[in-house]
Structure formats: C-alpha cells, structure tokens
View 1 (tube, rainbow, N blue to C red):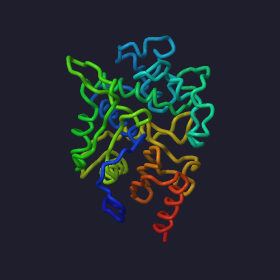
View 2: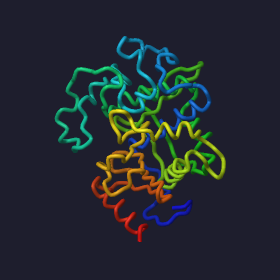
View 3: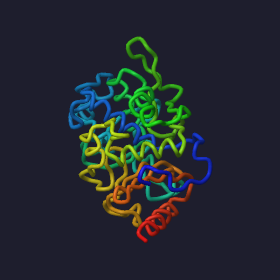
View 4: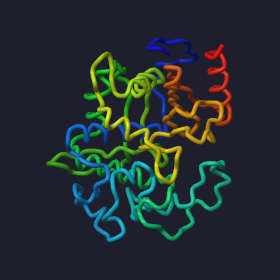
Length: 293
C-alpha cells in the first residue's frame, strides 16, 4: 500500500503457477508492441500484420487485436492441437465439473458480437504477438517490465511442447495465456505485486514510464458487451464478481483464485492465491473495512 508492504503471509517469494493471470501479462506485451509502433492500432485487423494462415478465412480476416484481448473475437480454428470449440459455451460462474455445455459446438457470431472466455483464442493471440515481436515474449517482458521494476529472476513463462515456431531462422516457443493444457507462468506473489503497482501507477515506475498511458487507458476500458472486462484485465464496474470491492478496482485473475487485486481509490495492491472464490470477495471487504476506519 502506498508503495510499501503493509502485510504478507506465507512464502511470498516462491514462484508458483498462476494460470490465467498470464493473460494480463500478454496484454502488457501487446501494449509494449503498440508503444513501439509495431501494432499501430488495436482496432486494425490482425491479418494486416500476421500472415500465417490463422486469419485468412472470411470469418477470421476482420478480427482485430482488441477483439482478441476482449474475448469477443469468435476466432475459428485450431491452435496447438486444440480446436476453438473446446471452450464453446464455457461458463465461468459454475465449477468446471458443472460446466455441462462446455465444448458443445455452437453457431459462431460475427467478430465483436459475443463474449466468450476461450483459451484457444488466447493462445492464437499469443502467437500473433510473437509474430509481430519476432522475439520470445518472456524476453520482451523481462527486458522492458520485469527487470526495470526489480522483479526476481525466478519467474518463468512457458508454452507447450508443440508450440515452437521458426521466426527469422530461430526456433521460438509461443507462450500460453494460462495453463489450461500445460505451460503457463510461474511467478512469485511479490513479483506479481510489483506488476500490480506498475498498473496502479498507470505504467510509471519510480518516475520512469514503462507503459504508455494510451495503453493503460485501453487496458481498463470496458468491452462494449461486457462491462467487467478490459484487455485481458478484469474490471469491477457491475460489482458482480467482487461486490465488496470498489467499482474502480481491477484484477488479473487465474484459476484457484490467483489474483492481483488493484484498488486505485486506496492506492492498494494485493496478491492472493489459492483461496476459494467467494472467500476472495470476503477478503476484499475485510481489507477495505479496515482502510475505511
């Protein structure tokens, strides 16, 4: 809080799998590529820059970077042996064992017309970012973000055994945006807290701008059809997910209630891991109750 550690418990320096929190790191990588002018416009079709067959079909050709990061792309195809259908009808509001309709094929809508949490499409976006960057995304993230904010050298970000591609005569692994079928990011709570604090300060660290304000504003702008989702960042505009938190708060969220919770109104960042989902909202309420007193 206010740039200082107010409390911690457990081994906060141990790298651990963080599941879909990795999606927010993909968003940051996209922001860096836009800041460098390599992706001039998130509303431009990915096919303008990526020509690897993944965006050639009439349905996929118009899909934009923003739609991919807002989970509204409706991209159709297979990525690393998984078809997009495996995450059709995925319901985040029920336990995986109760997700009876997940994987049942549905008719696709036009890009931008339907919100669906789909890891196959996230991995397709990760590959598109790699194509533009022409270098491993973990290297980009380490050089531009993690080293400047003083993160440890213990974090790792992996893809799958079959997610290697050749770029400029170099074999590079395309990372995953979670750990749905393997791979993923392994990182400590303290390193995640540093990233949360960077985003709290709108991309500035110790007076140095690491991410443009333009990217940060886009990252936390709500999707047109889901007011609680930005560019791979969860928002709290409806206060449905976290009724005890403020509307201005935002989160990076992964399975197992791995969360980076940021409350701009209180200059607060909290990283909480491995608690039951509803318990996290209770945690938010208890923390804010203390801060209000």
